[in-house]
Image (tube, rainbow, N blue to C red; front, side, top):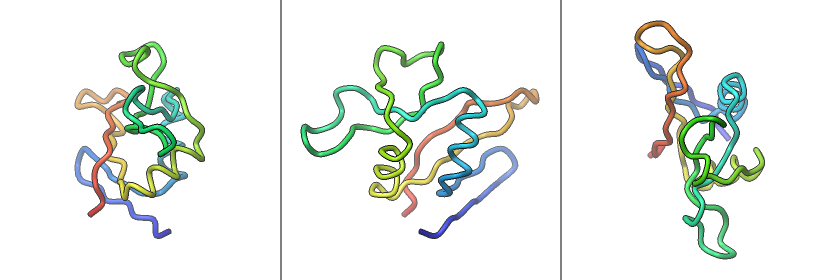
Length: 100
């Protein structure tokens, strides 16, 4: 798999598994899926990053990094994220975008 990282002044996008995992774990996040969005026997649902103690606790189900990256790669996604907020604080902003 080719790894790509694109950046502008505030946001960066990447497909690199190590970069994604390091960013998430540095902020105390875990790989998750939205409960009830997967089809039975067809894999997991919509990917999300859960930051325990913040919104989403009741709607997200933690999954392994292996499951997460399998779904991430199969779905041709990029991880869009922000290192710092406008006022310089550590940011948890992230979203999944199509790499096409």
